[in-house]
Length: 390
Image (spheres, rainbow, N blue to C red):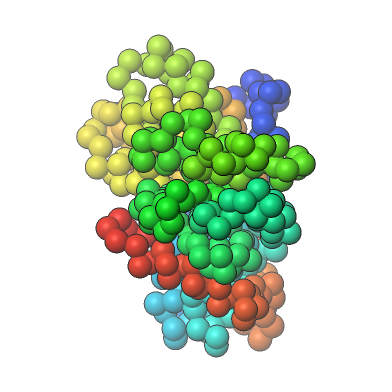
């Protein structure tokens, strides 16, 4: 079967003007970098040899991912780095919170570099420590804080992970969120969970995997007084969901799913649990990035898939599996704009600087934050059953 083009609209067409704040689509990627930059990056990496270990997140563009020693999701990559103690430099081709996790898990004599400090994560940035501390104070004032267990998604800053560590909570990934919530609810009688920072993963896990009702979930909006919820709503709620979301996965809409099912009989909808509840409940399969990759790898020739995750990965899967028909679940060209800040020439610049003995853009987590973030991460690693993939 020949590969079909992904059914994308150019920037400026099909724009959803009702999209939630933070999910605006910025359009296609810039043109590929000068081929000379590829040779510079290759030469610098060869000069560094085993002193450098390059991590490449699945959402990176191909011109960057070609230099990765390993690819994967954020937590897997951080653990891969920790398993290479001889590597003096860890160059993380991802975003800021991922590099923080690598710094937390690696040894003190390993230096973590993020080639572009502007490569952040809109979701992680939606939960700032002062906001979360204000929320916790409000929960205390409402008389419920002593029953609340904070659980943060891996896609959060180190100081939010540390907050959870200090307050008896844990970290989770999209693969083990169900187990993490089971653990949290077993911590106290009549326990509640403050789930940070992605409301959609929290809601989907609570409702679809733990069997809660939607009205047992409330959304805490840090931009509204009192989070926009009443004391009575907090008392009734079991899940207090932070009002955060992924700028990519939050774009996918149920009407596109309905349209695909009507126009392409037999197509299967495969999405990430960071998608909205309305999209997830319409999908055939829901799972982490690794789950999505493994599902496509195991699918039979001739199968049709509409995939709801970051576009670089969907395009890569389509090229790697021409025997299947793989399309993108959004109508518009939309990459993760922050992930794709990390490009050529940023990578060769960082590598060449290391060759010259200059460490640029080092990511270093302070000792106290690192300690409490490790506490929260270890609680996750101690969870029974499910794997700890992202």
